[in-house]
Length: 250
Image (cartoon, rainbow, N blue to C red):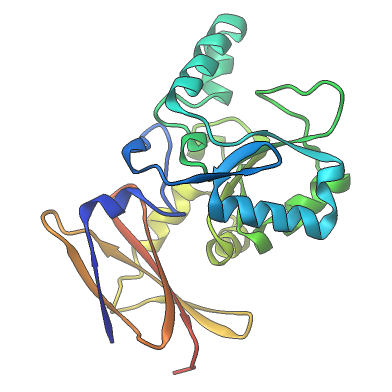
């Protein structure tokens, strides 16, 4: 076994951080963003999006409308929408500054390429090239973050244009289970690390997913299988999600 030590700050970093009205984004842990088609995204998200679009020649008909935003930009968007569209519309389609996924660099608004594009609600229909991307998004680590019917859970209106990078394992889980992040992050807490991991097969490998609550003080220690490829993400709530790709079957 291999030992991993994680500081408290790691709770607020990673592909699976839950950012919403209840859990703010801790921008002091902002990672490096890179450019993809003129829009800034976290490196893994940018690479995955570009790969997805390359496979389907998507950039011919799809444009990135909004990726990473600073808190200041989110505040400007909020204030402008409140002024132009009113409070009800704004609270439905614009996240409160400090609580926007766009500040993480892991979220992207996509739009159908056309002469005029609505910045807040771009057209991204359930047909054609847009639907092709949507159907294959999980293969590249993305989920439609605010689907229809989940408004009471997410607190955000239906946004068919907004996609969130969570990596391929968790995108597949969420898609198969029909869960949004507000459901998925609590769901994972029942699979305690070192006791009862959630198991599945993916691309011929066994994948183990588990949860470890962060220690209230000091570092959190955990052991992982030395044969596995391991990734750990904070959940922005109270702990960590550990994903292990087993190179050898038990």
